[in-house]
Length: 504
Ligand code: BES
Ligand code: ZN
Ligand code: ZN
Image 1: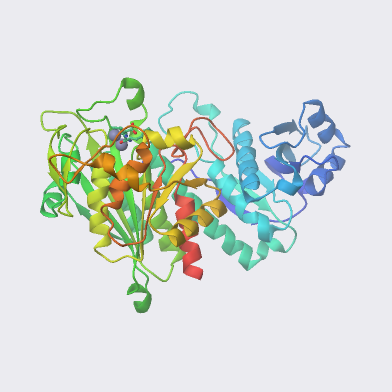
Image 2: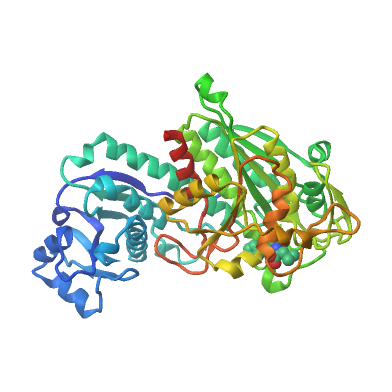
């Protein structure tokens, strides 16, 4: 998997005007009077920074970036201004976005070393700036063999904070924590971006095993025979049409202290369809094009458990990745088949493209058997959720208001947008089958809701939340700290959720 070089991040101090780097990133809001590092550098350049910026239409608006070569008038070769918009509207997310854009602008001019002037009070601003920078540095380029000289790897990012602050233990700790989270989010992005021909269920298990070794997690992998033994009739059926056989991958963080290790776990369940062709209910060419990303939920789960190993919350975190390739073949499951789930419920398959809920149903049943305090599943589950909420917002469903609110708060802190959608009881009747306990597909309208209600059948009384990330798992274009492609969505929300629970 991607051994793409990751830049080294470090705290540093010293005046930005005396800082040697290929690029110096400065944050500029849209107020007329610049302050802090922007004003200092502008003075050092005799007013030419802001004059040139204004002449080029730079107004400090979000999404605006301006690059100026210093021609030897500063130790920094270039200055990059990133707009943060109205100062009164500035929040953690606008800092993350701006930092991400600054790093991307630096990479475009082939910078090896970047210094970022962290604006304001670093106790508040360091985390979002570092996070945006580390996420913004991500590139998926290991398959590019041409134009290598244009892809100079960024080697170091120094985060400039006021004198003395660079040796602050708590800032150092903040930076370390942020980098654990961004490393996990970038791992999730790598897994999602990896082509399905490479990332089979077996390979995903290997990647999980690698993460488990590095971070000291327990790992258990079950193959097709074990899935049958576990009576996961729905999960098995989805995987049976592919040469690349299914895997149930369990990754477990267990606290070192005995009391904490005995606490009830938080369970995280991820959909890992490594490729969704639709099966015999084959997708159109257009709809199939991006379906290597149908394992984004599980990538987020793996990332989150990896973060747990570093944050060390005082309770276990169980991650379950339900991995299968949904393919048409002579061995594939068929429309009309009736499957027996681990829970004992029978399900009539009316469409083999509604496969995620079948896999998740069995895995959720299995996960709640461990009596978790809460189970959270993440899945690129429905196109309907993308229709409802678009590309930048995920859907959240839950049978528990406190859990839903806790997740919404965590997602807001993380800067990952989710919107709660209702589990409308009337919608349940569209899943009624004549010959089995349920069908796997309801009517077209409200498809995201019906899919969530299908999952709810398998969680019993356990507090449960379902995050439909079909929209935000992929960015349709570069934006802020997102590159086009996988976003790693979910990792940061789950990390915030676990971090907050660890502290309460
Ligand atoms: N993996 C898809 C959902 C999806 C769609 C994810 C678009 C990302 C982008 C899921 O398995 C699926 O195929 N859902 C179908 C259900 C259909 C059979 C009604 C869908 O939403 O179109
Ligand atoms: Zn599908
Ligand atoms: Zn799918």
